[in-house]
Image 1 (spheres, rainbow, N blue to C red):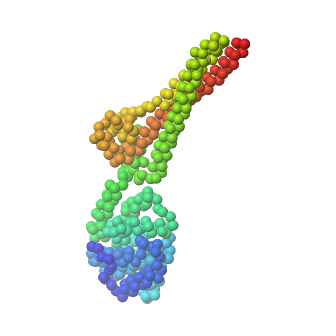
Image 2 (image 1 turned 60 degrees about the horizontal axis):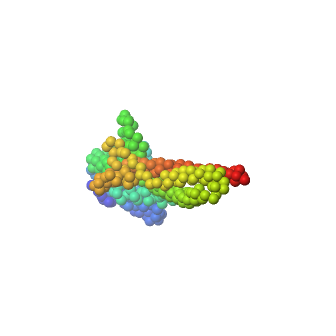
Image 3 (image 1 turned 180 degrees about the horizontal axis):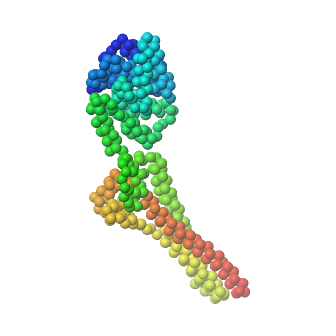
Length: 403
């Protein structure tokens, strides 16, 4: 049963409704998109439906309806303590209307118990609590939840983190408890389905995980489990984007340095060979043969290391038994057919752990290639430098010894 506004009325309830409407018009706050007059009217309508279904006395229905009209008025005066502020406004109104002290106390207690963290004990407080939970978290969940987030952002002046917001929504849904038989029959199953839908839509860790013995997992399935269970944030994207970019730039720098060494050594080797075959130079001083040969050997060694550094190589990651091939790098899927590659890509994009794992493994093997490139480049430059120094020293020695 869903009602927008109550039809059961007494002179006091009619005056309360008009007074609350006046307060919302007079103290209008554009930031209150969730707690507003429409919410009060909707909750009041559900309170009447619950009291009617439970066949409660009119005195109980009147207390619950009065509390429902004033339950969110406190947000107009004190957003930090809205429950207390709303109870005070209800007390002021009832005293002005000449209500007996017992009724004033019951309305204040109903508001405090229904909206507080303490389990409501009175019948009217339980009815109001059920109506609030049914209106906000069952009947109007899709439209009301985004409004609650917007209101909190407007009141605080800053955005609400997505992960934190999802945690708050889950916590609020789990805190919803229905007390009346009508609410348990009509709203509790819908609330359970709501929790199930969120569990299926957002991959989350099982709530009973700490009660079950942990089973040993392979290294490839456990490491990225927690990362895959949360939404993909910009920080994760930035991490992989920056690392891939750095690896590619370092590889280009290494290849450029290797090409420099290949060009320099190729030119110097041709010059050294020409000097070695230049008969007048070697005949005039046979000692010149030694530095030329030294330079030939060291330059050839430096050239060899530079060529090995820039030589293309393809790393192959052999998947463990039952694991799909890694479609991130071509060296790991060239042996697959188009259908197998599409299936592997589809499986990877659907499984967060597999996606992050494949990207991390690809970065690891790119790092292995870079490590080998730079080690060979170090050997090339070191041999070239030592050979050049030794050759110059040998030429100087041959010059003075040949005099």
